[in-house]
Length: 363
Ligand SMILES: [Ca+2]
Ligand SMILES: [Ca+2]
Image (spheres, protein in one colour):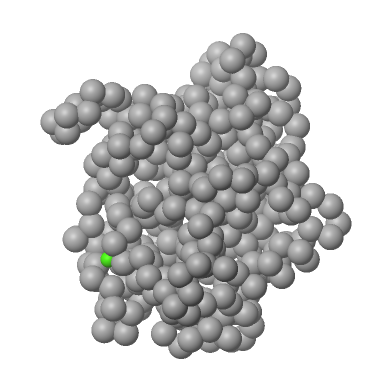
């Protein structure tokens, strides 16, 4: 579509591109985090969504999936933080519209106010149409200038959470996480005596990353800010699970949204992005990441071999198997999983918010 996450050949040898940093990272780690990656999640998942909403519409679908689980007591959505900055998108305002539709108008928002990542914007401007239309959607953040800096939000929010309690779902560029990692203790006199990297490693139990292609290739989320993707994957000592281009692209969802109310901003986002041509289907890259974050592998996914993701500065990546870091990437579980996941996601997207059904049990 407007930003085709085109498959590109791995253009450079990753080991050459990454140089000595990567090579120094290839030593086996005695304290491998892989044992903490679950097959099935049974507890309420506290999640933060870090999104490049505006680059593609599946971020909006992913946010709807998070609310669906929150409605059923399976997830708590702590914050929605945009990696795409206010100069090229209305990501935070559009997120507030979706949060408000689902009855959670006060979810904390953040936006990248650091150095701008070069991004031309999306031709349909769906975040602008939704984010600015507070008359229809009733949200109170109708301008990105009202939104806090992502770094300040992350530091305060993570500091307040119990250790190893947060699933951080990054469905856009890795810019915010990289920027956060470089903050020092007592950043901007915030009174928090930890570096950003320490906060992430102490509070985040899993980093779920939509980005890359597996076992190797190149994909939009890493390409847009390759240095940040490389820095986060090589330097952050948090268990990581990746979901790549090849998984989400075969799971096309969104067509069920035509059965939802006309004031559903998720429906409108898919309509605008799809230029009004039904069915409003789009690949489920970001939606799949949220399903895994909350449900675990469930009946849809299986883990790759244990290993480490090598990400070059140009955003290309390659999986290096072995007991190197203990990370995984997701695969579709079996031949039936694609259709099961597709149908499940369309069912989730079609479900009315509990706030609108008046059913507080969430069943
Ligand atoms: Ca709000
Ligand atoms: Ca995205």
